[in-house]
Amino acid sequence: MSRGRGDGDQTKRLVTWIVVLGIICGCVYLYSRNSGTSALEYGSKSLRKLGSSYLGGDDDGDETTNKSDEEVQGDIILKSIPVCDDRHSELIPCLDRNLIYQTRLKLDLSLMEHYERHCPVPERRFNCLIPPPPGYKVPIKWPKSRDEVWKVNIPHTHLASEKSDQNWMVVKGDKISFPGGGTHFHYGADKYIASIANMLNFSNNNLNNEGRLRTVLDVGCGVASFGGYLLSSDIIAMSLAPNDVHQNQIQFALERGIPAYLGVLGTKRLPYPSRSFELAHCSRCRIDWLQRDGILLLELDRLLRPGGYFAYSSPEAYAQDEEDLRIWKEMSALVERMCWKIAVKRNQTVIWVKPLTNDCYKEREPGTRPPLCKSDDDPDAVWGVPMKACITPYSNQQHKAKGTGLAPWPARLITPPPRLADFGYSAEMFEKDTKVWQHRVENYWNLLSPKIQSDTLRNLMDMKANLGSFAAALKSKDVWVMNVVPEDGPNTLKIIYDRGLMGSVHNWCESYSIYPRTYDLLHAWTVFSDIGKKDCSAEDLLIEMDRILRPTGFIIIRDKPSVVEFIKKHMTALHWEAVATGDAEDNEQGEDEVVFIVQKKMWLTSRSSGVTE
Image (cartoon, rainbow, N blue to C red; front, side, top):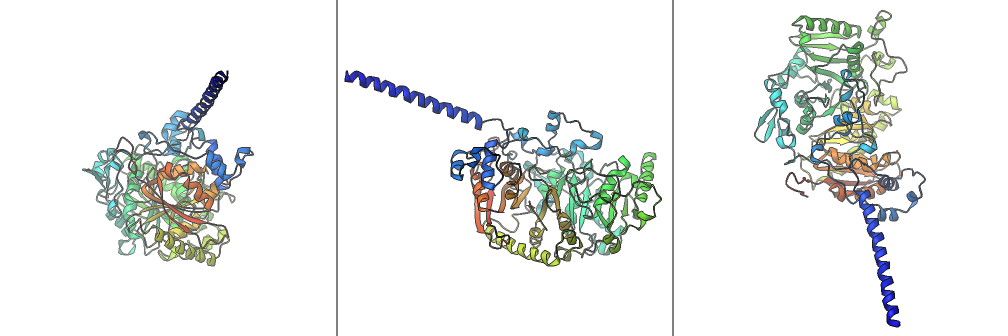
């Protein structure tokens, strides 16, 4: 009897274990189903709760968000992030034409709306890491990169054949070289730039005009040789082009180490404040400046400083046939009503100059078009703001000053600009901010020094630039900085341009308008803390930062200790490794901040040579 009872107990225990194992297997299956969902499910709800817990964001009232950090860390850890399909190696989420086709957006192609930003909803975002192209190499270093890049990094050679008669680019073995040519400067951008300076009677044929001309907007820039050759004259250009049929031109520009941005003169204002540029340039940029009452030319007018120039090289400028002559007459009439004057006209190029004061606007006949913008229009509001077919007059202060009041470059970098008063900032606050960031950048470079050499870094981004003092502290380095100002904060970008620096407005809940593998270093000062206060995913931001960072590139995070702990949880999944940690000793807000520096590893897909870390 006792033996029979023992067999019965064993049977019961066996059944119990089978049930338990069945439950465990069921849980594992459900977990694998959940964690292995489509790559389109980007930033899941559970991961958003994890990010909220770490970053201090508001919870949604769900009891699970009230768990302790230890419980959440134990239950929800991002084990891995899948790698996107190789065909997405150049994905720009908010400029993805496939998305436009798939979602059947009703866009006006004649207004270039299909080249403007259209971001995917969360359900259609890619929860995966963008792979480099097969055979990807660490980019050639600046300044050599201005003239040549690795072909495997941008394996697109159609521009070389399409523009072969214009000297844009030439394929030479495993490299693509850039002779410096363009549609209207076959003999080189350097000679073309000198000719523009000569037309304006600038001393020594130097376009920087003794430091008075510093910031340039190059519209329809091609592969940005114009902007690349301006750098030797201490001039920095925002080279602008859309992701159009010549979709890789901006990618080439950034691979070369030349400042550039993906954008289009369509229906929305460009993400730059008013009075940002001393010169706008268009060389055969194929833009219909007469459309919609001259709205595109009026957008340039908004962006030009008092006394700023528009250099226009195009067949219309010398009117060879009847159609060119018609366009030239209509365009001349338009700019005359805008109070622009011809500074000089020679051969294929005309240069107009914008007035210094409002006097000409006041003298126009009543009802003259284009009209002046209404007094309640903010010319510095740009994020998602439609262009307006009106002239932005100067404030009383600018009218009286008869110009910008800016010091010549390089003194303007550290000279308090007049527009500080727009924010209630004093000269003392500006100078103190400059000194604080000089100290911080010195500390960053000390932490980075074991990993970098003088030519390691070229393309940098300050993801929350404030007054631009991070970039100003890097003047002695051979780098350029894209200064990003959040769209919902003080629009200090106009201070940054007044300092002779470059930047754009952006919302970090969305993807940035640029190709993958663009920047060598990202600086994120309290960016994650800011994300934690919004209804968007910090994990999305991590994957976006990985997208735009070059392999072997660096990220400097300056934020709360909890943010650093959150990022550490994702390091393995992102193929990042820690480089250094330091204290933020000079934090003036009284909050704990630490400095955490990471490096993106070089990894390749199986299509290349396997994963290398």
